[in-house]
Image (cartoon, rainbow, N blue to C red):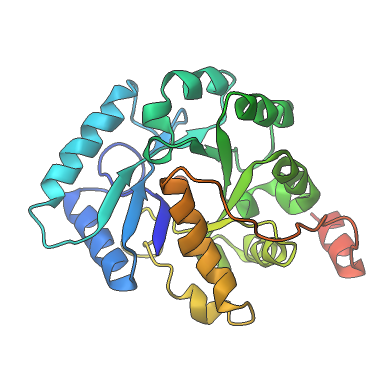
Length: 263
Ligand SMILES: [Fe+2]
């Protein structure tokens, strides 16, 4: 498996607290069957300690060197989790070798947890015109997507991708995020499942449990989300088709209407 989203480099964001914790996280990942992990520290938000973007590459190289001294046999690639800021389009163009996943055309895009900025649709369109493909991180944790998953559908129709956190399926982020994570799978609005791991305890880099947890879904489908699509992304290849995406508002159940109105 390939884990496309993790906070394993210590000291540069709210992820691994120190090198020992990073090693523990990587040991968990290796035992879990993860062959490749992308280090994606927060940037442009208050959880980031990065002021100078070049520092990400420096810290990444230092970390990779240091990890060679351990017994861990796992490929570590560079990336970032880009918080949505007004000049993100320019930043992605100017620093694509640092901000994208493994220097590809794909980049992780993080929204605030409470809302979606006006102009997001235009941003996605513009950045795609520049040749980049945004991957919307953990939409199931965002209040506005929870209220209206059709908004995510709109963004994906333009060509953005969506990455759900593995922990959402076991309720790590609460009941609503869990429900929406399953809904998004049902509507075929998920391209990637990644760990978004921050530590070795409750937010650890574990993906293999999905094969048991999501046992109603075909194994091939889970393979697609944790192996095949992440593999295409790190190789900068086109993402395989996930099948027809369904508009969450096209056929809405009474239960869904009630749930969304009560939010
Ligand atoms: Fe993250």
